[in-house]
Length: 107
Image (tube, rainbow, N blue to C red):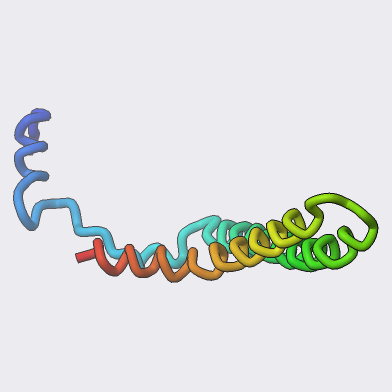
């Protein structure tokens, strides 16, 4: 049976047509998925280590800086602590937000 482009489009647009709905669980064995998961987890780990370093260095600057006579050292140190905590919160909430939005819009 031979179709032209318009009749193929018409049959594909019909409910229950030849295109099956997408099932996200079928893609768990996709090629390269484990490498992508490893890459994302590695990036998240580096960001968390950077956030921890920002908190520790920020506390050090806030405590030692004013004793050494550096102006505004306390504000810079507190900014580092807040930035490090913010990085940790973003990494921690990323997975929750992605899964929540997927569940909201998946139908």
